[in-house]
Amino acid sequence: MRTILSGILAAGLLVSTAGSAFAQAVPVNPSPYDRAPWWMKESVITQTGFVFTEVPANRAYFSATFLTVAPTAEKAQAKAIEQTRGLNQALTKLGNDKVRVTTGFSMRALYEQYKDKNGNRIEDQRGDKIENYQVSLNINIEVRDVAVLERAYALVLAAAPTSSTPVNFSLQADNATNTWLYNEAIKDARVRAGNAATSAGGKLGGIKVIDPTGRACETDILARAPDGNGNPTTPQEVQFRNAEMAYAPPPPPAPVVAIAGAVGSAEYLEAKALQNPFIQTPPLQRLEAKACVVYGVQ
Image (cartoon, rainbow, N blue to C red; front, side, top):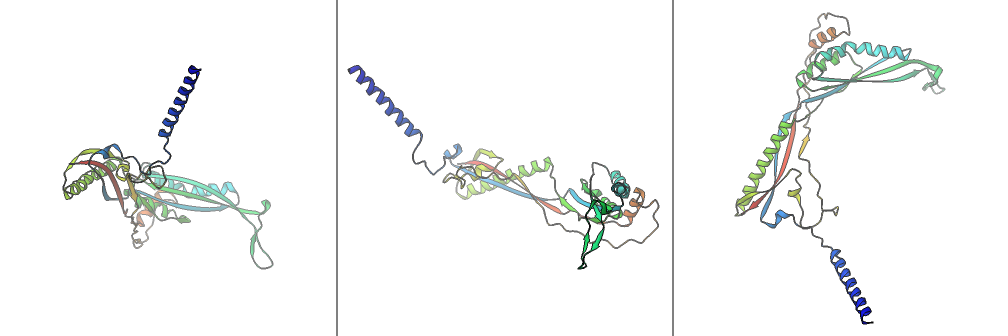
């Protein structure tokens, strides 16, 4: 009996010990504070460096639409292609690496129309009441070398499109520019941190962390983030902001002279474009970068 009782007591002791361990592993009232990162065990200063520059836009975009009408869909499509054949040839001469051209078609039927008793014009949308087909040929131009922008734009307008869009600009920064900006942001962080440490009566120490995401400089160790998971929003390392676009007024029309070549041909459009230049000046685009660096403080 004593042996059995001892076994029961031992089992009870084990259960009690296991329960105590479980209670310690899962606290009933977790602390509302986040655990400080390792580099906060020493005196540190977190500093974000900010830099910006303005660079001329290096991309341009615009489009044009050509509408053609013919009794059959095939004829309407062939008419649209023939109307833009010379334009495509002239744009190709500028270089595929400098000007990217994409085209798209859309088509709709034009039905016979009649007037109702109130005088309203109504289309008789029946398959046997189709009079013509209208083809819309859209040409989208992406200019990757702004040195040929004015010529490309003049060529498109020389082809007399039904409609066209204004030129939109954007900036695609290369890797060298992004790297230079980030390095400058790190330098700015050191200047700011050094000034702050000196103003506080200390001395800037060594580097603890260089964080490209910027989260180290936004860590909240006093309270959890609003979403409850302690993960602050990661800022973008480099942000682009389009500057206000300014368009120069069109120049006065050039005197009319005879143009050689068949109307609509590449040669005709090139000669016509030279007579009607359009000044397009790429605007400046703001390019920003920031970097987070954690320094020790002595």
